[in-house]
Amino acid sequence: MKLFNVLLAATCLFLLGSTGHAQTRIVALGDSNIKGKGLLENDAYPAKLERALRAKGQNVTVKNAGINGDTTKGVLSRMNSDVPQGTQIVILSVGINDTFEGTSAATINTNINKIIGNLRARNIEVMYFGAPTGQGNPARRAELEAMGVTVVPALQDGIADDPNLHVEASKLAPNKYHLNSAGYDIVVARTLPQVEALIAKVK
Image (cartoon, rainbow, N blue to C red; front, top):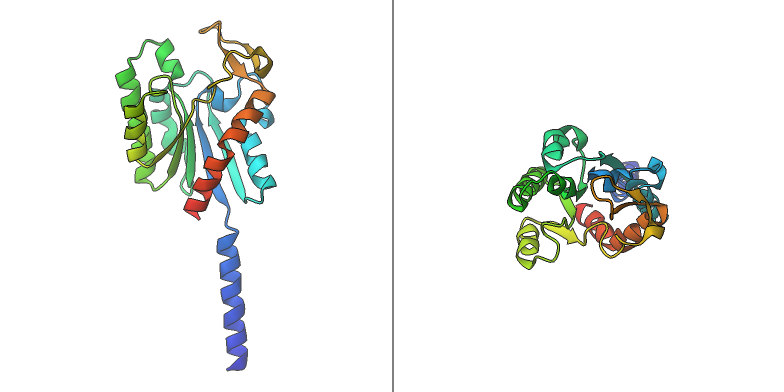
């Protein structure tokens, strides 16, 4: 009986330890701002975020599911394959390329709602980098938060015009740039608290 109790206690401790240290799976989904256009993947936001989280003791993987030039329609078409079963958190940044193509703000928002709705139906937490269609719009922010979304400023918010934080100008938007490694360091630093809060929520 005594041996049984010892084995039972050891088993419980093992299971508790396994649960406490279970890996959190994150997918960063979107366009070139997620992909890290012009950079090695190791210098883009997803890889830098993963390293920062691990440095704080978080057992995580952050998959880079960004595609240069992608749109909300493109993300809708690939999200089931690029956000595999077992994903617990998605970080979403998409919509700017839709505006370059002349897609209306209403259509962009509808597509983003569909993306988020699909993810939330799968019990996946979502952090969304506010796109131009929603940035600074309290009603839009409230709509997204009502869907259970963590809304943060647009990925380029406040740093879009700093050439020291970018690699090159976009052909579609000559006055805009893609972030370099230093630019992504800033984005990681300002989003780390929100991502950690979501990790705590899914554990």
